[in-house]
Amino acid sequence: MKILDVKTGDNGLTVDNVSKFCAQALEHN
Image 1 (spheres, rainbow, N blue to C red):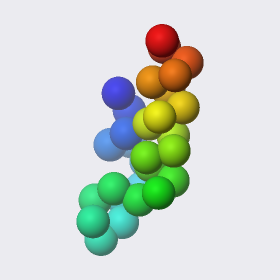
Image 2: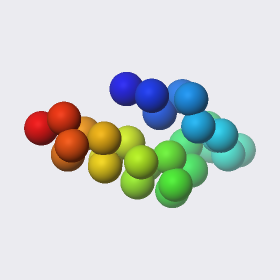
Image 3: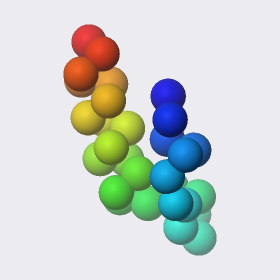
Image 4: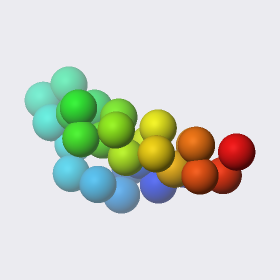
C-alpha cells in the first residue's frame, strides 16, 4: 500500500491516487 507515497489533493485522495491504488491491488491479487 504505497498510496500515501503519491501526491495528494485537497481531499487527500485524487483520482490518480485511486487508479494507482487499484492497479497495485489488482497486480498483487
